[in-house]
Length: 239
Ligand code: URA
Image (cartoon, rainbow, N blue to C red; front, side, top):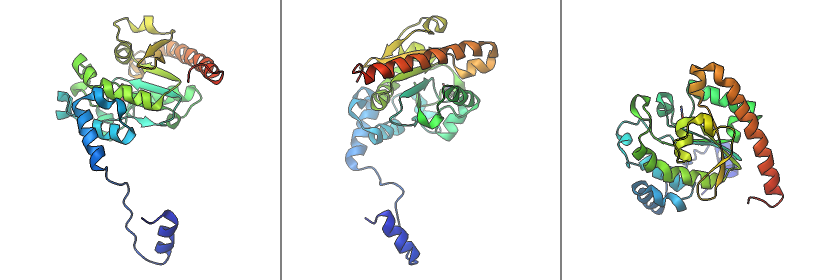
């Protein structure tokens, strides 16, 4: 294996050097990813590469037949903020990245309003595949994908999760409580009870711009809570 300095040196000498962009996954990684794709509950021990491979290979529900590609999630793997939306739309299905369409631009603006950059946070969806015609996820689809999301949250281990929109909120929190009643409180998700705050989906805000004021209140609440949680963990609270 040649390192970067050697490559530069050899190239300066006019020697063509073949450098693979990324090593192909080992047979062990492929086998564990295949296993996890068949049983997402077993995603619990996967590392990032294995999890990504498991999601890419997943055929647990019918959405695999209509997707262009899976949409794994994007951002800082050590992020302290994690945003979880519903499912990829047409643009996300095309580009393979969550929240890149019109709603995504508004989510990026919301992230900036928190004083963060999109690349500082981690963004994922409940579902990794686009439901046809942007219909709501079926409970069975959300259940098929849940193990992947739980593992993503565990790997990131954020200080605070923002559930973006009603569907994400109700699924994450396993409740049918209306979103208006879930806002402005701290909830928890998953094995380590990660704190969760709920806000409106940017697609909804585009349709109902009058509600943007409430989403700003949610962001202020989240920022204040985040500060408290970080203080507590610095003082020996949450690990
Ligand atoms: N809406 C979502 O919930 N997620 C996306 O990735 C795009 C739109």
